[in-house]
Length: 281
View 1 (cartoon, rainbow, N blue to C red):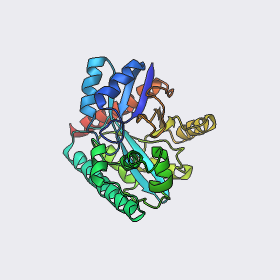
View 2: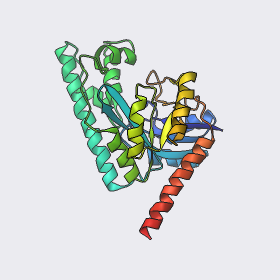
View 3: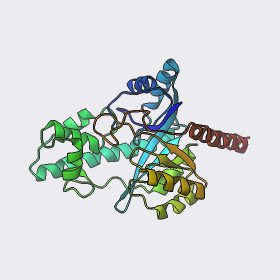
View 4: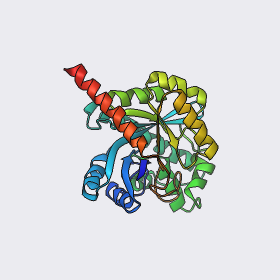
């Protein structure tokens, strides 16, 4: 059974609509698929409907982006109640911050003599605006040859057109996911997240670690399995599928994830629901 617990759609910076993503997952033999767009759950309901139609189990999820000093820290949330009003208001604030950030990047690019239109960046984003949409606008305008080059030359963390995102700590993201009834998981720790940061996140309520990930080497895989065991964290994994030349650039379902990772994730989510019902009784 193939499992992919980390994918994106056009609701954030993926290239496929939720229905098309679920269809591609089905064709790839994926039985369980988590749709975890950046700072939005707008694709979840459509993905759930497509999953019921095609026989793919879809897990509602989200990926919340945060920054700590010079490191990006992403927190995944699984099985959360994405219809909660306060939660959607929170995500809306994050997305509004993304729009303002992208507009400032376009202005910085203009000071560098690179003229792209913010309206075009917005048009390239079906949902939440992100740096990949600025990168695509640069590619479309012929300024760069790949979106990777756009990040390296202009909008990456050390680039001349980089703009900081709305301030949010990983601990705050963990707290939001917990409040929404979800299971918080640290995404791709191999992307420069220091091991020393993990204990504080565990104290804040972190419940899992994304160990199985395309950019993790075999040595990193073994290391993060040990870290997860030491902190009694759930182990998850996925492709971080976006489509095209974004992120890991691998196909949906191509990253091995042990099927029991889903069983353990479900068990934790069910425990939380049970505890919530008991508290409300």
